[in-house]
Length: 299
Ligand SMILES: Cc1ncc(C[n+]2csc(CCOP(=O)(O)OP(=O)(O)O)c2C)c(N)n1
Ligand SMILES: [Mg+2]
Image (cartoon, rainbow, N blue to C red; front, side, top):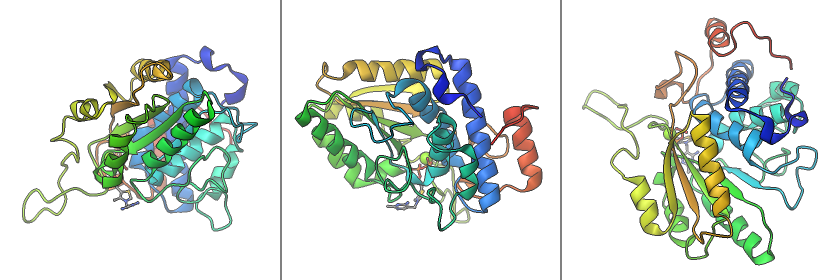
């Protein structure tokens, strides 16, 4: 168990965060193996981004998940819920042991995040394309109410094909939402892909491979930066810059984070085949060795 709420945010080093993220990835695989359903690749690509938010960047208190002054977080790519729950559990929002209830009918931890059930979930998601609009609404309300908190939204690179995303990309700068930051988990894969040849149903095409996202967002009036989404120094710098822009730049920020789907385990990394799936006991052994070595994880 991580000593989440006993260590000050500032004291956590990139190495600490990397260790927490490895444990989080283990919880993803272990939980999905036990519940026999769930997503793997997306939670693992976004794990470092979420760990850096909850363990270093965001002003949140797991003991007071409804504090009106807290920073807000929206996992717009809601199918990565088990990664989000793992981070919330390690951070102290609820016991790590509760992860074992994931996806059960009577659990607080449903297959997609539910703001009415789960402490630490600010917006319900799962239908792709909606989270950035919700985030812009929250950020606009904060401006109107004179509140000084930040709203962070993680989006999938397949998800941003949805038209509703671009409605918000267009209007957020118009409202000067410099208290809003979008983070794109650019893992290059979505659920399947497009046919590469007539006989191949699924190629590995990057959904946004043909788009200069930085230029597009900049053109719409956003601050944009591209980073390595698995390098905690780069992640923390981008987050700090986005927060520093609040109340100053008049522009929302986007962080385009290059990641690998299924990051961290040899058989899941870089393939759409583990978008979802259930690891076998043998695969769990491999994952445990690769992520944690001989370290024990206490639930
Ligand atoms: C509106 C909508 N359409 C389709 C789906 C089914 N779906 C779930 S995940 C996914 C692929 C998402 O790809 P991406 O955004 O790249 O996520 P990641 O690679 O991070 O898993 C799809 C199509 C959905 N949840 N919502
Ligand atoms: Mg993707």
